[in-house]
Image (cartoon, rainbow, N blue to C red; front, side, top):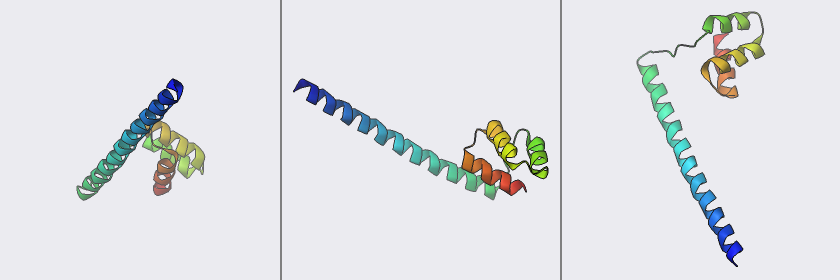
Length: 89
C-alpha cells in the first residue's frame, strides 16, 4: 500500500513539474515572438557570427554545412537554422 501511495506521489510530482515547464516554454515563445516584432518594427537585424562563412557555404551549394555552421554559431534548432539559411540564398 505504501508503494502505491509513493508511486502516486511521484507521478503527481512529475506531472506538476511538466506542467510548469510547459507553461515556461509557452511564455518564452510568446516573449520571443514579441521581441521579433519589436526588432522588425525598428528595422533591426540580429547579427550572425560567422555570417560571411555561412554565406560562402551557401554560394558553394553546401547547404547542409551552412545549416550546421549556422546552428553552431547561433545555437538555433534545425528548423530555424534551415529557414535562416534558405533566407540567405
